[in-house]
Length: 111
Length: 114
Image (cartoon, rainbow over all chains, first blue to last red; front, side):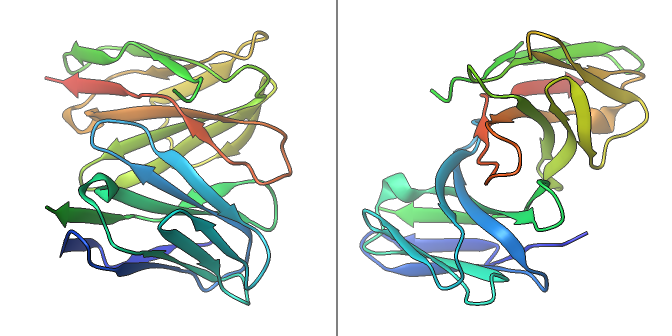
């Protein structure tokens, strides 16, 4: 079974700062998704990356899939309090359509 | 609103009891996933169904079972409940199997076992 690691586990920053969170695995994924979860609610899909080296932008969020499709990063520019939440990455195993989730990065943006 | 509905939203019960959680997927989605999320364990995959058939199994205890019905709604049955089963239980659905399996999550059921 492939495992996903995320770092950092916790991140607390001031409004307006930039940040990057990472999602890593020793195995290759056919696709990788990023979700954001607010306390007590279900995760919400932000983006799916499929091609090695792919970069996708969603307003102030930039997602990158590693060239070898083993890792991904999420960069947030000028963080806002509304970005606060748990950021989860999820990789789709190449063998079949099972998706595994990382443990998440808990982000707190202080006004 | 993801289009996935879960009932009940909250459930409080005692140890040893049995409960059933219900999930209705987004219209047209054939896959349903069940997850357990607790503070110390993160989001744990339990089981996946695709068009009524079990597709993948994760860390699901033998005391737990699930099924997906012909109308595609799903139920997760938890029996002989223990204190440690207290958690948020999420259902998610996705569209075509074999593609990217982007999942759409319901609002969850918060289970408290006393």
